[in-house]
Image (cartoon, rainbow, N blue to C red; front, side, top):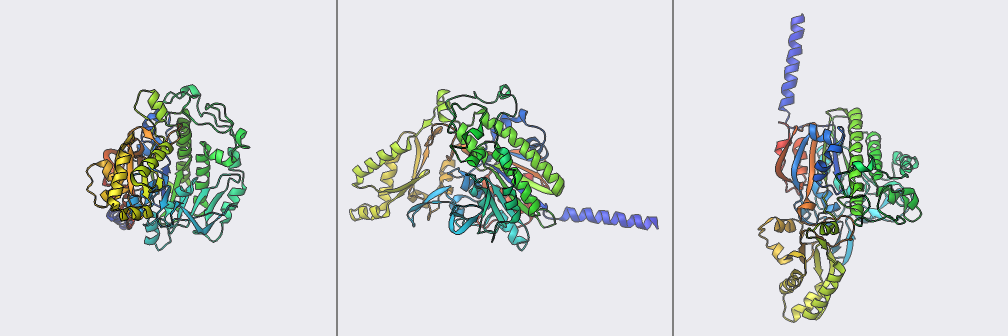
Length: 546
């Protein structure tokens, strides 16, 4: 009898192993997508010795690190960055050209996530947000479709665009931090009929209030040897501050700034994001059954801090040491509530950033600020002289929109639209520190010859984009003279980390080039679901378990 029982135990074991090996996909209970806003790849190496064992190091040592991961279009900014990660394609296809762009048909500048048809909940404001300008599906949409909308999908971020676009058209909810004077997490009527009770309770608690405190360094300040001096002329100040050094007495500036906006511009904004994300996992009951769920988490405060203080600042270093602890806290929470080995994580960034140009210049590296307004005025005057009228309707990021009425008037004088565009391009090309210029005619009939050409092409959408595109020289930016910036085609803006970890993921690393558009199709193969309908990327086979 014992032999028969033993035979059946062995048979069940063998069949179970065989069945698991034959399964063509992995099915984690929860997928966690983490986007760190404005994270350079070299932050991993620069701060490595100061990280603990439970955050970045755990993800890398137990997961798969992609060392040569890049954005493959411009502009490298937040909204298209998040969207490209989750759609598996570029702005040319998904249509999110930037955080803002000029709408040629409405003749006005539009914000990527604005939609007044869907008022927000949890705010006294009148605005509305929704993903309605997104032209394709996301990997999260595909998960919902695959499981007949029984998968739950939630987005969380300080920034609305960082919460909305990752979770696509069909999400259960996207939540973002209003800041201002309320410190509320809010959402849109696009997703829900009313604000969930648990969110109201979270907003009424003292969790956000607890971060009204002074921001000082996590470690003794003399240990921050990987960064520049604490007090310098490369960093922006909060209103009321006399210098840029630690400590930053956040409570002191509440009367002159919206108090919760100030908190979100410190490392505490990342802590608030972790708090809310963990609460969302519990209250929305994510990862409790065999149907996979998905939460996207975007740590937005890293971007705000980078813009204020710059790549080389102690503030940025301290933020990443504290973010390391947030990741440890999140991983420990997932181990306890979802189960070790039952979830899959990927961590990446929506773009990287350049050093403060004035810092580079003082270090004898070619760099500087392009005076955008001065150049625009000179351009208007040159165009007026050459064509007899102002023919520019709008300038947005690295593209110029021409006035259609003016083009028609010039056509009556014998000039084709193509000739006018070429004439404008020639004028722009003569401007100092403009590296390359393209016209929409070139992009419509494109034969990309190098990586810069391809990046412009992949950011070009014929119906939404402008008429002229330009790329600045390396190290030059049209932005504030202090703090770091981004948006260019240069490698300092494109090279970001990518780490996969957890169920279905091998341990290891690669130095092969991968691109942002490869993330969504990789997740699709892992989960055994359809790829987003605009996918142009390729699954990364090296990191997937056989």
